[in-house]
Length: 556
Image (cartoon, rainbow, N blue to C red):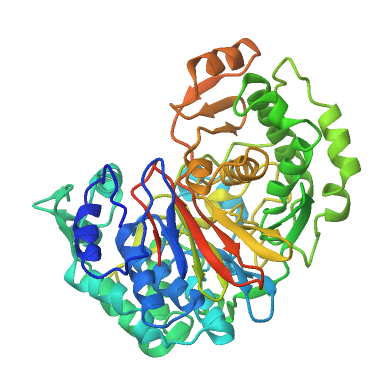
């Protein structure tokens, strides 16, 4: 068994337990080394979530079963990132049918929403963009149940057992979670401060977080499935809270909400096929960035050289502009992907890039910001079933609205709209689908999934993800190195954020070309790769977990 050279608290408790129960083939990632397995792989943002999925695989469940267990546990151990009150997207590959689908559980914008409350001259319009009025219809549970109905082998009570136990019995929080709680604690309602604090102060690293209310809510979901939220007592509690706080979500919004299956969007790239979540997400914007970058010889430029990073920064500005023009609900104004993902369009966009100077970017309205306030995970099993999943609350703890007595935080999905000018494609339209920017990705070789990956990060997601894809395909990195490598993100209107590990000489070169450079952490990515034998059976799995977070990749 391979032991990591350094393990951040609270991971060591889990790993000591795991060492006594894991099979000899088990391997976990370290900061500079991927995990390996022969019968499956899981990489998530928290060791306890990785463990929960690993235990489902060990008990005979498949990747789809393990996905639900992981997702539910992440909502408990990373309550600021995702949960019952959130939404998300899953890219799902069924090895038996060899079909890959995108499952959208974002839901629709509440029918009664008034988009003008998010714009001047409405008093408090900026506060409205973050609080109760920014809550949109949650959809994660609908996504879990839709996937299980089509692909699962285990029942919800078994799959939610670990999440229920961790919520009711508690777990010791680490420094990252403690920092998030401390940062937002004063914004919590009193009933939430009672859960996340002690003696009037926020919980600290090394202290136990117990969420009994959330445990009861998860028990209701285990018993009644999605109906518990989408029409049942849990949903009624959400609606009462919305009425009390001025939100727009109604019981009818919850009852009519559905998770939807879509075909992914894809491009051919250096002998591979890259698949991403399609409309109504903006995942196609990931493929657009990759496509434009193919117009240059990237290995010749050098990984993270000034020339390489400058090109990507300028490409991502152009991709942002394209998104603002062409993003749309597929039922109303679908983006023209046949043109946007064509070699001719990529060549024209690349030719317009100034290779020596940063070109100013003028957005149509205020930036929706950045951050790592989401979670992503990947799961693969011995049969070759693969899931790449992103789930979120929006910002840390979403809208900061917790439904009293349930432990459920509600999202602030509408915050990630673009409110100006009024009526732009990323504005808030009552009853329409949300045009989210998250982007689970899979890469296929020879007709089989070779890699699955994704990241949190708000509007940086569609920039981080293509950099990881290029690290894998253009530069031949293994998954751990691909997710750990320094990266950058352009943030509207004029900021270029780079990781601290980006060489100082590169930062200086970017500044010289006119970029406004700032050092900041970018994303918290997770991914896996699969190797096959001559008969097409999976024989080796490799996993990577981003060292920027506290997550864990674990082979089975």
